[in-house]
View 1: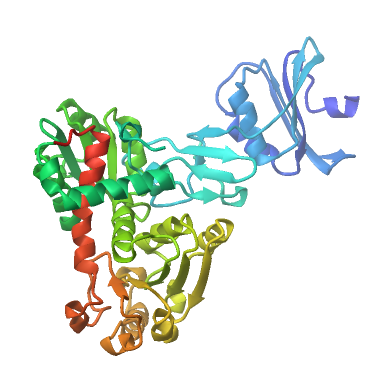
View 2 (view 1 turned 90 degrees about the horizontal axis):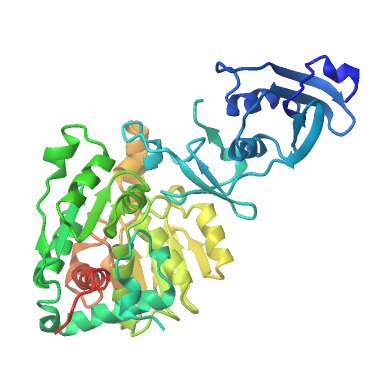
Length: 154
Length: 319
């Protein structure tokens, strides 16, 4: 990582998410709960030059404690994003984000009449994902693709 | 090989929960129950069924109640409208309350898609879906298959026309998918342009290797002349937009969508008309009294299918 990148924040310990497609960094930050009160600094940048994808976004979160499930939610927004775990200023591990097989409470079923979308019942959404078939609601069995994804208000 | 024990304690949420062999097993048991009702008279002794009908459904509800009562079981009278809906209780809480009363099976009808699967997840006792919104109504599909088998002796190799509201019609969708699982069935879809089968369903049928074709209302007479059965469904006013334009479109469709007696002049001698009921005006009344009408027998068959399911799920003992 060169000095120019460090403009958006050097972190000693935490996670760095790089090569985020332009404009997607905001949604990823939202999915990871950035904005809520937390310890450590968060750096978020968008529109940086990238030799791989033209323009890119970068997100760095200091002293982050993020579950594998949360990391995998990133794959919903942008595939092929790599998450680096930084320890003592060095990349300790790189994880490729993959959409989890079960998504609970984050992604909404696109069927407005689904029981999981009933405000009175307060039932968490329950979506199955299969890389070949796409998404399927556990309750109403509605099958859908990525372009129909809706997120719960976080 | 399918065995009686395979069904013990199982939920019946979707017709897809059963393999074709399991469906055939249920149909055979329903046949046995229809032919020898006395043999099953006390088979549900001591068992209690809790019907939770959040939506009115006289036929399905009565048929389930008759089924368990005629086999010696009991029904828990729980009025969800008076006790739960009125007080704003959540579905989850109502389900837990019912479970606490010692029910052996819960039969649920609810206006929300997926509510039956949710109930099955919440409850430890088996759940039978008696219709969840526009989604599934597996006992209707089973009784339709039972009736087709009763008419023809087999389900495979059938030529069946499905007519009416194919866009929203839950029974039409489930039946088409179920038929696609049997060998050599040919399905003819007849509908107004605005109520054609959804494209994702046609895609699914294609993937399943189902032989089907789509037809306009003008071809109604010609198509059924080549079929064993026509399955007529109701076109509902609420499927059209509100206001005068929607009303006009609805009236236009209803006028053209009408199975008349003279359309049956060249059908096969063994041809039958099925309908999930209630019917309104899509079938000319005079057809009711002909050899072609089979919808009242079809409705009656619901009783035997529901008996068979209750018997299998609760491990009934036949005499």
